[in-house]
Length: 89
Image (cartoon, rainbow, N blue to C red; front, side):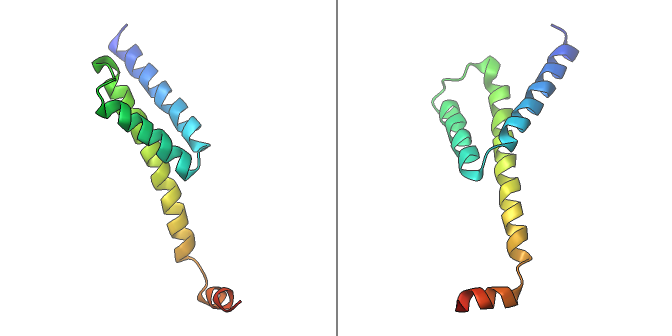
């Protein structure tokens, strides 16, 4: 397999991981990331697959960060008058 084919396959695989991760909520993405980290920490991943596992983990990590950023943005945009009314209810 040529280096170009390998690069294209990896890019396609990463895109598929991103699509899969896009359907996960924060807890699901964190659980998937935890499972990958456990595999990496107990040396159960063959060296040939190490790069792919790390990249897969980055996809889950990016999904978690995107979800956290979204929540943070919605908190920043909260109307103080609405918060006051909600707190008094």
